[in-house]
Length: 250
Ligand SMILES: Nc1nc2c(c(=O)[nH]1)N[C@H]1C(S)=C(S)[C@@H](COP(=O)(O)O)O[C@H]1N2
Ligand SMILES: [Mo]
Image (cartoon, rainbow, N blue to C red; front, top):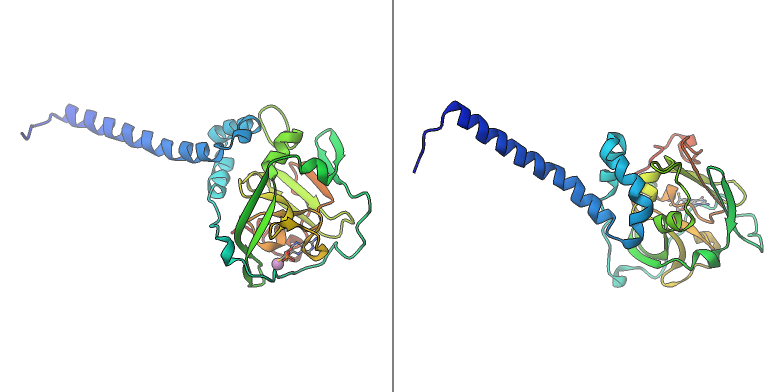
């Protein structure tokens, strides 16, 4: 039943095909986005991001690149001895009344670890990678960074936009990292207070609270969080000052 098509008909068919193709192409990012926001507590505070997702090409690209999930592993793959590296900002004794200082726009406040622990706990077993060339499967537990942002309504510049960066520092200010917000809100980024299913008590591993950010190299996984602040200007970053790539993404 081969039919002869007029040029007009051919053009029409091609247009329809192109239209369907375009429709499918736009569905891909939308479905990735839906997957990011599947978590119920993501919806509200990330609604502003959704707008950016549609209108801000740069952010869209970043979000897409960060919507990849790092591979996870079974508990049996976790070695008994967890490697430790880097003690900047961990030497001074931890203050007895340890609190995390938060800054976001006009907001400035402090929270305790117990307050943070009210939020849902998430665990991850993934391959931690240090730029120095070693990697190890590790098991961490804590609060999703995006849950923390939503719960305390921080990181929001206005009704439509998030601040572009998150800066974190040790309480003594001797180690510090800057994280792009799309990586901070990645579903696997957590404020970790557990290692190997137990409270993180080891000071060398960042007790009482550290960052676990599987989309970045080890250098960005700040141990002993004292300060979390949101900004549009790039926060200073310890290793970037030594010439390492600012984003240190994986
Ligand atoms: N406060 C602080 N955090 C830090 C570092 C550091 O020196 N000080 N080193 C980083 C580096 S280079 C790595 S590889 C990881 C190591 O984490 P671990 O000791 O729990 O294995 O912590 C990161 N976070
Ligand atoms: Mo590292």
